[in-house]
Length: 192
Length: 71
Image 1 (cartoon, chains in turn green, purple):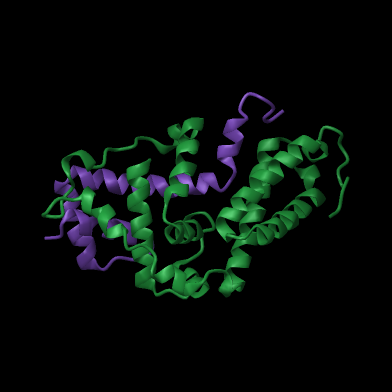
Image 2 (cartoon, chains in turn cyan, blue; image 1 turned 180 degrees about the horizontal axis):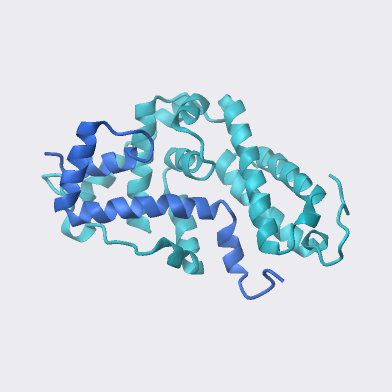
């Protein structure tokens, strides 16, 4: 990896602690998406290398970080698109038998909301992002999802792959995918 | 008439594929009458916005607020 491509001494990428911190956040994020620490490490390495060569364009740490994560997201999308066997198709299909039970306690006999499970409006999302608490809960809820639901949900909503791309990458049918996404959203809605 | 469980499925699929005219109609009619599903639909839309924000490392920045951001 190229080092010291940075001129200004204030530049964040010269700050070892900042970079290490950033790297570990990125590896965590990439591992969640790819389910493989080595692939995640490679993607992060490439994203950071790209960032170092252009670091002088970024004044603040927020801007830099947002940009580095955007690069990382593209790297992950590439990996997911091109490495089909990453996600084992059969393991995705017979996911979650227990999920029918999950819907079971949300809805009554007539399949309407149980009184105490009826969704309430979360309110303005922008406002909740400003609270650290929201993100802690969000991550915890993601971790609570059954594995396959989490995987396709993150492919769809984090990496922003199209549904047909996800079907190709995972080898599941569109209707299977819709079911998994639906179940993931239902769980997250309850959890958050 | 679709029930709430079926409506939550449609709300989800609307994020992933274009609904048919018939599906849209069923969905809209149900939402007019059902506040639970109305809230569900809004929350699912927020979930997408939150996810996009999450991938920009926004959540990590917030944890560090007040320390060293945006000099």
